[in-house]
Length: 114
Ligand SMILES: [Zn+2]
Image 1: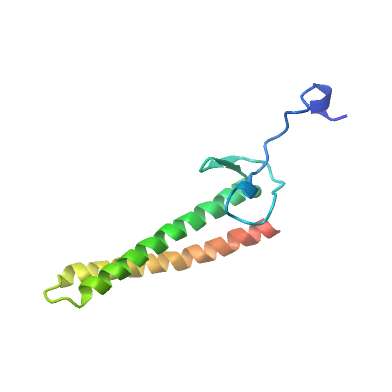
Image 2: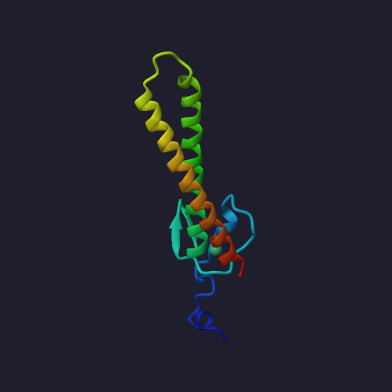
């Protein structure tokens, strides 16, 4: 007989990772829920993966906006070259950060599959 049953708390069990309730596929997770992430209780490796993916998505969105801005303003006469250069530089940094995040996401996924 398990300890919980002995104490009469059959309905109360250890909280589990609720990854199946998120957009991430991969079914159920047997790890204990340890971290609250966006209203969902997750195990640490799943919280880490989701956090990385959300951050990458946000950076990707900002690169997209910068591209749009550069397309709209890049060819116009009298464009502020200094400002244009700054946006271009920011874009490069964001793309570099994205590359790094992709590596981190890959290793986070790998850690979960083991
Ligand atoms: Zn999990």
